[in-house]
Image (spheres, rainbow, N blue to C red):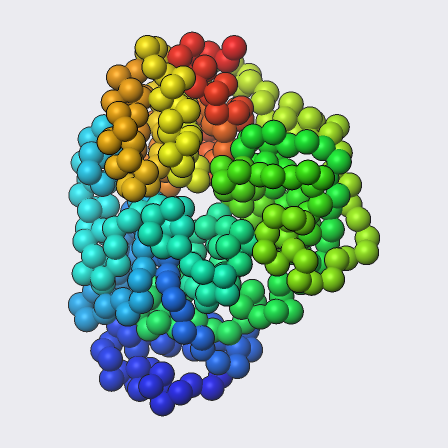
Length: 400
């Protein structure tokens, strides 16, 4: 891989040990994928923030880099394992809280903002079409590639951090036109409703496309932000590509030739997915209701506040969002309404990365992505409903 004089100087240590280590990672990655060069990035989003994912070795690595490493481009973080401003409300062990704070302090010394969100495009990290990025979180990567028309591979935590410390990423994969061509085409003869349905559509497409870039044809499709966010979260979670093209909606949908063969997703298939994922657990009542995976928009927070107004929740209920949305919710009185019901409006975190295994056994959520991870490493039973039904479960303490 060709390196410029400035890049080679970083590799040789002229910018410090952390930057040299970061450049080594990028050069090795570029060699693996036959990248001809490094591309300058406009922003970075780093995963590997929750201490439950990093562990002691990951924390030690961050603190070692923080001795002389500094981000040279704007960079934000993925959700942490707790609400950084009020972790006590989540019932976490003090040892976890202490170690999670060390993780955040290390990132702070590296010059990376503690804006811990899986929706950086709603928290001040908004790329323009064609921008080169090094983002990590799968739903954010898919949103940036597909909806915004920026370009990023799905980076691992170490490679994204390396890009933050150097300002570069290898030129391969979805940075190149060839990898962005659709390879499989879906005609959706169904009518997905809200965000839950679009998440289920992402699940079905992801399972059927096996990592190929899909072209989606959904007659009359006008998905809102929340629906696109759900689609972007589910598609890569269930085996799909971190890029899709949606005819009439996404900016590159008409740029490349459409595949000739067509797969059909009809109403019966979508309804089957609804029924399968909405099945109640074999026994017992839910003990956790979670919304906001990916982080809730202001519209989602407002809808939750309106439904919870005047009620008390019967089970632990979390609505997760980003700090900018939480600040607006505070100003508008939405936070007070939600928390008067006993529910929590949390920021910086998500039930997918919080250390919940063993604490809860039965989750109800509106997130297809959340269902996948909570039933896997979270070892929970999960029922998937739309957001309003989830909140009804929270109020009733049982499935209606």
